[in-house]
Length: 302
Length: 302
Image 1 (cartoon, each protein chain N blue to C red):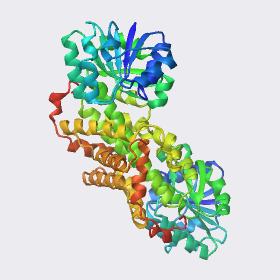
Image 2 (image 1 turned 135 degrees about the vertical axis):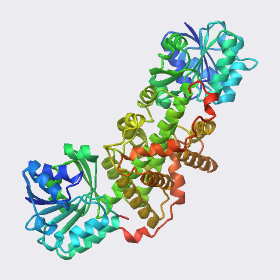
Image 3 (image 1 turned 60 degrees about the horizontal axis):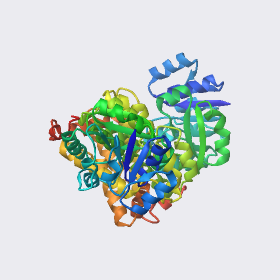
Image 4 (image 1 turned 90 degrees about the horizontal axis):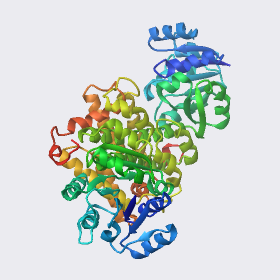
């Protein structure tokens, strides 16, 4: 099977590499040519000068770009993949986008006999490197089954949730859960530090029970150490939560906790921290914590 | 070693039973005499007519009552344990209270040579039944070491965090984390249902990654099924979050997400749901979700 991969960012770079390793004839495109050249060198893959050139004569095109408008550009634009694809080919979009964008693209691809699957992922850079992503798919079952061997190159679990758009809606559910865990960890760890507790002891005491989460287990120590130069960037998380809020607004679904989380992320961006891991929002709590609060007198732990 | 246990509630009833099974000479007191009689029958334990009577000639008194005022009453009241204890005895308080209460009681016990440990627990009713609680201790190291064999009867991990009060502060950290996970799960699962997604598929797709938490793994399915007649009651969780907010207020620590969670719990109480599991707050989101929102037209998943 011949495959194209468009978008060699933090996630796409290793994902496209897994395609080569899995034996697929793989052609990649990336907007920044230097990154494409580095990918071709590292993975012995082929690169193309445009999305359309990458997609010529392939069976499946995978996309992993930035946001809704980037997907429109690489699919529907002048050099977009749709103009180059044969009927029967499939576009799999790993970008986290709105559900409406997925429906819009699916309608356009259907006009020319091309299949579409919205397939956002979770697992982060580490999951992409290890080829152990969780892939949440929306699309018709037959199209997803035909694409499955390609997705299996970097997906540990590949779940069809429902029709086009439902992969994106599931990613929104995922990000709402993540935001709750991050807000909880940020308030809890800032509280622990401000109360003068030994955070190593506190984290080990609470980690085994109902307070635990992936974020506490994997980011608790880095939050304590004020380390944020890795992980999932504030800029991306805010983009994702704004997608959640727009979708929720259309459907009349209240998300007050997500509104709070989105404000924290916006404040982090305003403080120049957009490129740091999303757990850096703990600094929004810390900055608002009164130095030398009255509590210094009322508790022996401080 | 002779032990007294005051407070045979959901947690205390099985905890005191573990003391008998571990071979400690155990005398229990409970305000509702019928519960005490049932405990004595089930666990072949001794019961006493007052906290003071239970504490006479014992080495360690464990408390697990409702809130700050209950602890004051059973320790310092007319029939309280402090009047009956010998110098060198130890009071271990498993109640979730303010850190100030712990300091207040410790100061009073120190006047008569009695030790004090604040030792709130996590692990819930299931952890108490299984004797697998996590116990977060504040107190001087020597006192905690002397009490440790007693705590080991129902504690899987027994951690000294720091001086008196730090057990309670750690429990506050625990509850802040729990509240974040519950708020996230409530907003995410309500969103998934309102968007028309297959919740079984969604939960399995997101459970393996960064969105996971103890609450998602252990309460996600019950939230979907609208089952709340078990677990950790809204009334208790709200009491705990109010303790967090009071402590944070004294110290100048911002907890906006906890303020939101506390409002949700208050609304659940107002709806007559105070006795249900804390995850019932998903209904606060559901009640605010617009039936037949415009999203019905814009997404094929609904």
